[in-house]
Length: 403
Ligand SMILES: Cc1ncc(COP(=O)(O)O)c(C=O)c1O
Image 1 (cartoon, protein in one colour):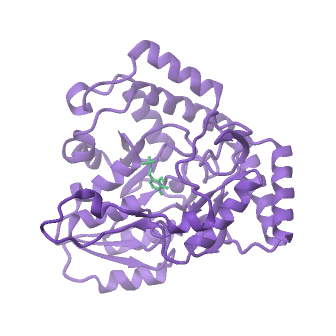
Image 2 (cartoon, rainbow, N blue to C red; image 1 turned 180 degrees about the horizontal axis):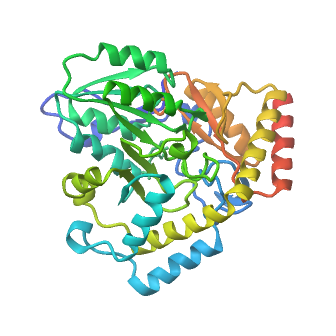
């Protein structure tokens, strides 16, 4: 069975019609009879969520703390729109950021545990852009083999030597570092929480290894911020790292329930990127309401993380136990993410369909988002879900597991 992918068909010079090379092979979707991508959601991310006109238990969003529909966040957005309007209509270097950015800069950098931050339109833009700004062709970049596509794209764009290390394997990293000769600078790239596996990087060890070998650590904390660490501050808090000497990135569109990305680090790093990171310099500034939202989220997380995290982690544990007892092959996750090992693209879409047909909205990951035949169906139960909803999900998983 062919994988679900875009065809890249070789053409003779006379065939310059673009339509010939942008064919989507959707055989698998047709065979399974389900397309789980770009579904139409017509409600907020509440409990339930309305997808394609039907109600579902939402286990498909990264709405870990359940803040996407929080009234205080909505008010923060609306208040900022009233005061600042809806867009900056210019790049931040040209048209400024609004004074909200000074407050975000202060709160967010101390929340994460870095000297300074920059707010990008998205973490994809940040990850795509930082390597081109910071690395040279004579450098070497070593990355976890499960690192997010946006990091890999950013690394590849530099054109320098780039080597993967086995997932979360510090010994392998040490070996690759020891073999990386003739470089000007070494970068080591990992995520904090790997979102398709629910695994957490041994970042303290990776960081110490970087410090002892002179490599620059780069960590993407998209699924860690608002999720791990005793106060939800993410990977630096979780790993007990102070005075962080490296590059930090995160999406604030997951637990933080906003729409932007962040890069954090030293004063000199941030000052440099402000002028030399093309993805920041040439892209329209993040809307003021998003900055107001980030400030509000920090306040909520600072006050309510223990309560929200208790729910999030207990829902994760209940679903994990149920899946195990019902015979599902799942990844042994530490973060509040459950992932069913589904196998091929066809099997993965089929698992998602079965859940969807029974009222559960999940996220199937297939190649190239995960390695071939390592398809995953991801389930994240946010803190906004009612306990009765989790009980219903448990019943559904049991029934489907037994059937
Ligand atoms: C690990 C990781 N990094 C980066 C991103 C991209 O974040 P954003 O949506 O802010 O572009 C994602 C989103 O899927 C992610 O999971």
